[in-house]
Amino acid sequence: MITFSGKPVSAGIGFGKVWIYDKGGMAVKRRHIADAEEEIKRYEQARALATAELESLYYKATREIGEAEAQIFSIHKMMLEDIDYNESVENIIAKQMINAETAVLQTAETFSKMFSEMEDAYMQARAADVVDISDRIIRILSGEATQNIGDGEKNLIIFAEDLAPSETLQMDKTKITAFVTSRGSSASHTAILARSLSIPAVIGLHREIGKELDGKPAVVDGYTGVVYVEPTREVIEELTEKKRKKDMQKELLAELKSKPTETLDGRKIRLYANIGSSGDLGAAVLNDAEGIGLFRSEFLYLESKDFPSEDVQFEAYKTVAEGMGDKLVIIRTMDIGADKKIDYFGLPEEENPAMGMRAIRICLDRRDIFKTQLRAILRASAFGNVAIMLPMIVSRDEIIRAKEVISEAKEELLAANIPFSQEISLGIMIETPAAVMISDILAKEVDFFSIGTNDLSQYMLACDRQNEKVAEFIDPHHEAILRSIEMVIENGHKAGIWVGICGEMGADEMLIPRFLKMGIDEFSVAPSQVLTVRKVVRKSRS
Amino acid sequence: MKEFTYKICDELGIHARPAGLLVKKAGEFSSETIMYNGEKSADMKRIFALMSLGVKQGDTIRVTVSGADEDEACAELESFLKNNL
Image (cartoon, rainbow over all chains, first blue to last red; front, side, top):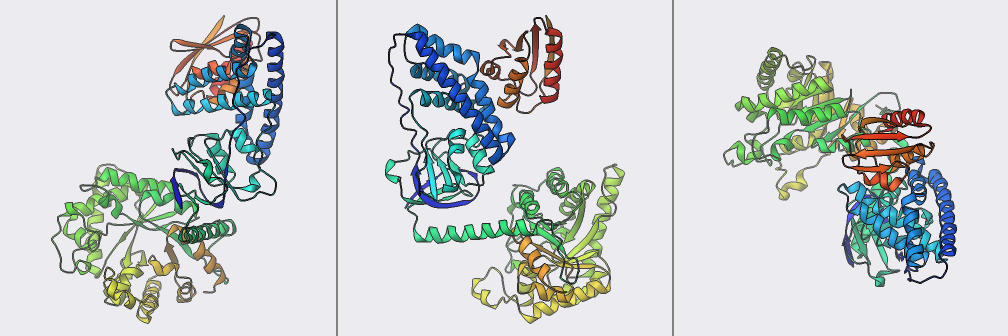
């Protein structure tokens, strides 16, 4: 197996065999001519043919990929009409008495150099356009036909040094499963064309593509930018599975996007996404999440070397709040401790960190850190529909004390005339057996519950999540967990608040129907699982 | 001769697409149309020259128009720049 690594510019996975695209036949022979006028006439004829080709390419591209992307061919046509370009070609023919092919080549070199020496990357990439139009004329002048993909061929992975947009477009795309080029930029038209045709593409391998690869089986991962020639069975299996999952996701998306998350008997369920940083927002939106049910704020603390400032936090929360528009964004205050240790917190070593200083316990001990985060969340609430969620609650007193800090933060902002939403709602995670047992009491203090099934399983079943030896005892279908969830839902509803699940169990297809029977109001799952959950909900009864 | 100045708002500057459209527009008139960017200048009927000015967002360009239809050409080019760049 040979592995190449480049830049992924069009997502997808393509299996097939290598087809080396060789521009061939473009070697230009310098030749002296006797009659300059005749040679210029020959050039003019070739230019007229090239213009006609570009016109038909423009219409083909408009049909296949849309007018905006097709514009490039109308620009190429204008370039062929450029007075300076044509004068240069004609002058070289007349003064040096050489053939039109050589004159075009020399002109192309001068003009492409002009672009490649410009400062910005976009203009530098335009050198490729000059080469493309010049190659077109040279090909016509030398009477060559374009290289076409052979009859009966299919599932080809096109390997080339670089591909001009017209070359990409002229190929029969039904025979192509991926593009791989050793040069190229993501701003290149080939990358744009590949994306609009949904054909995976990897560019910039910065390695020679040897002729000996021709015809060999290969697979292209357009997500990671890795190209495998003669892949091992493991690679094939892994990528087949990855492709299956991605394809399924795409089908789900096509089938379920913007459909309501509603049971067969018409009960609407809130279907939210869990995100670990503002970078996951795109995935949540793309998968049609109806809100963010769990925004883990720890990333801000884990990524920095010292406590993240209020402004840094505010920007991150605001990005997500704005990105979701009027949809709910539940920000969980930091859950540091247990397996997430941070040096600058200066926490002492603990014998049993899962049961040690963690999450809300640190927050109520270090109110300054907590208040900074709360102020940032409150400020972000002015830019969207934000809620606060407290982790690791075991007593009513913790909620009361946390509320005091929230009130202080609100008063400070009010005094400083900084806007925030007065109606910001407050919820808690139910992830300890204690919280389950007193959920009737806790429900009176908050606006919603979200059951964190991962930690709840750990604490309920007395199994350390970090300890592999006890992994087998963590049974998510354990009756103790299911009864706990049922009890929490019941107690929540008695107090008139909604109850959701934000742990991994929320995406368990076997359990979703049971949770719906219990009366669950919300699921918050990984962005990639949102549509699967929607599918199951739409087939179930509550 | 008529002239005007304009500050480019488009984030990509005068890239290939608007350059092509500008050339087309300038080609509709018989007047000579020149664009100046700093010390460089280019005939607006020539796409390579126009692109080589490397006009970026924030650059202030000057356009001069001279010829029989300069009034109309100047007005149309100015409104084209305002609408597209």
